[in-house]
Image 1 (tube, rainbow over the protein chains, first blue to last red):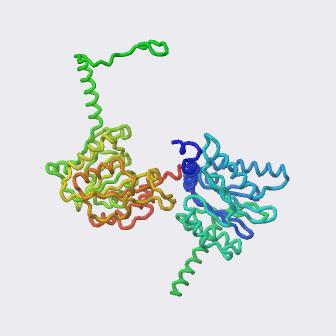
Image 2: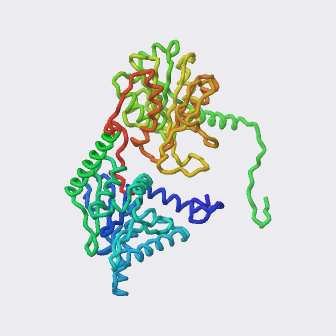
Image 3: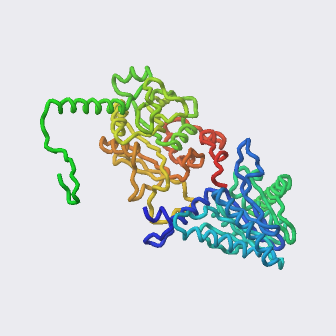
Length: 246
Length: 281
């Protein structure tokens, strides 16, 4: 059928291949991004790794440059291509204009690449959405999201992948100035958002943060466990308070 | 014959002649047809105790059929997991997609696509059928006639659980990811029970074994209800299996069921393809 094979419009204005690519994104595990005041946080649901597989080669969070990193959801191989192109562009930009890229610049580059594949004959769109975080030269924290159609927008907090809708609804309710008042609180918000949808709790979460003028840092599992325990205690305390008041 | 472009084609005469030679050809054709029919025949093999009591027909008040790996997995986990079920028979057939079941007398190995029948020990009027093999269109009628031919029609009521890909579900609205997997129901007109989920909307249709069974029940006025689960995964998956839970309400009136299943038990029946599949991250 014409509108399902190649990227041309259907009579009612749909680009079915792009819409199907967005379905492919939903097959990837959840990733959440939070923009704090002095920190940006990326949290992902780790997928189960085969016994003989090297865990550290199965990563959803990747650096694009010292001050920018991204998490993706969708087709692994497509992500590798996009990430490689973005990394090359980051260095090319540094060499050409002697400045690191702004987060918006590299997001726009990725999004333009994705859009090109929705208009080329014989090529299918990239089946990934990405959350791109980092700090610009002037110290502003940024979070952007791209999708297979090649659109990109800035967000305060967002989620992509399998249960993105549930996580986004959680964030809409819980992303407040209080919730991101400190770095620690921002990290905990990301963990809480993921715990809404991740099976078997903290063991399956991976978290990365970038602080202003610092490189990407992946949280160690002990740190994560401590934070998850803190959150569970806070939850229990909240429940007890609610019971007492009723 | 000469064509417009100047070629000369040799053309065969299409006049039909009744010859002795033609009869031989016809015999050969008939032989081939018969051989194919025999190969594609559906055989229902019952265990000795049941085969004996089949001189009359099998007393059956409730027949539960699961079509598809998720429906079968749901029954295995929630119903057949208690120790009180006996395997009483299997259906064996051959077609292009189900080649393994050419051995008729030997029961299929566990894990193989197959069509298995189970009977409850304490309540022998309850029969369960798990069908995970592909049954071709030309074999569906035979399967239905042979299976229902063994059962007593009076007092029989049928429930069918069937898997279907959500890509085949036609709806004018956009389906959000959280809605999938979901159930839809269809009943024969003799069925007076309340369906536990919305009815299947037009223009969606049923195909395959569920359709053959429901048609048979409609024609023979047997009360039957079907629950079709639309899911977006290809392999057996615990979340899809859990979607069939509303059907447990009907089943629990008849037989004792596992009240509460741990996620681990369910996962045993779901193929762990995620670890091997690196396609999506």
